[in-house]
Length: 317
Figure 1: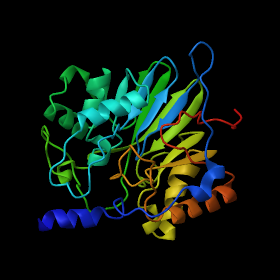
Figure 2: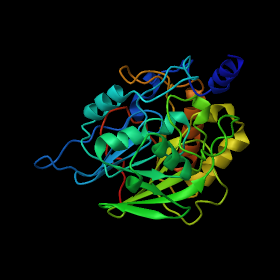
Figure 3: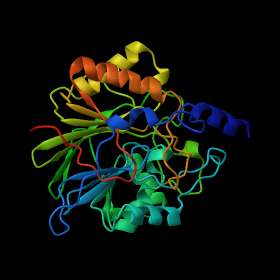
């Protein structure tokens, strides 16, 4: 019991006691993207909390993380995917099939549901050896598991995804790798971090970067380019100015981003049946992003959950 209480306290800065509001940021919200021409559409991204992002160009779709179960913070000693909730969430997002499900790392709030999402959509499960071992523990078919190395790229339709090894925000929780098949129910701490990725997504000559957590490896993105960065900010408010400045420099400035869209800003213990609620420190993180964006000429925007958005809307080529 003491261990679980300690675990909950260690996670409190990431969720469970959210206090902020989006009311002061309405002018930053990206507009919904309409469907065009006989049901066909251009590239859209749907944000569904934490680092779950659905990329869809009308021909091919893939998803990062796919975390829908949203387990309660008082049940971390025994967690497992909620298959019904996953199915309802996929239906709400109009997802019938996916080419790939890609956890950015394997903490429970990223990878708990990933194999089930892949199973329900016919997708490949793509990521680290830790990701593969979650899939194996769930009985996911081995031929549909893909492990990747630093710098490797995979193509899905008109999407090209490049995996660049990164780091997590420094925390003392579930460190290391998952070295054998992990079955559920399990403890939240059994979902060890594994490899952490920055994901570079290229589509029809335009580029995005997904940084699922507020960590970085110095120099890892040197020479890479991305017009838009989906930037994890969970826990960033608790870091000092030097860390935040380094994070901006090593991620946003490194790829020459013209727009930043924060992700991993919501209380991930809250149900997706209700509007997302920001984490404590959200206002501080947004204040930092807006100040740096103004200084460096980077457009800071927000994206509402469940809303398909053109991430390049308003940005000239």
